Image 1 (tube, rainbow, N blue to C red):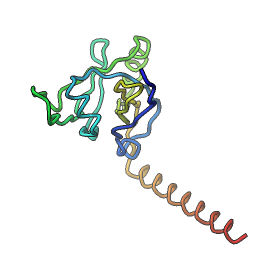
Image 2 (image 1 turned 30 degrees about the horizontal axis):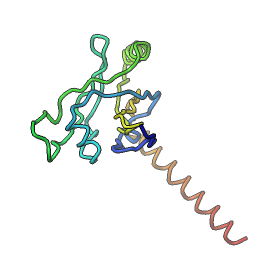
Image 3 (image 1 turned 180 degrees about the vertical axis):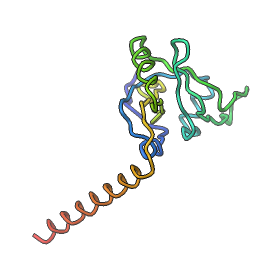
Image 4 (image 1 turned 90 degrees about the horizontal axis):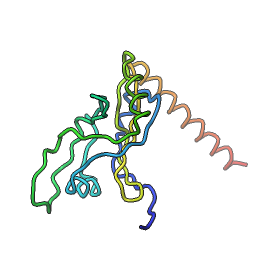
Length: 155
């Protein structure tokens, strides 16, 4: 089997904007064959997706995977999907999500050595003033970098 490395297919860009990410786990996902092909074509969406621990298993809800154009059968585009983690990781996630205000958010979907993986983040929601502060900080850093670059150019 050839090692192709990580190939990021789908990212949830709103996750880092709307949430403060405290911890991240890599987990596998149980998919149908047509769903894998659809995800390889970047025909999926993580915008409203979230995960939950139920009965010692981690399930993801709200991930929309479009129907693969050449598939024979049909699948429910927003069905719940099982995430694959070690038992110790599931226990840790279960304990940490019981804290008030914490949730599990999928950050990105990628292929690692030909297998679909999801980066799952433990997140706390940001308030609107936190978002404004983050935007102001990013703009300030950008202005500083721009000024340093111009100064180096002048020398």
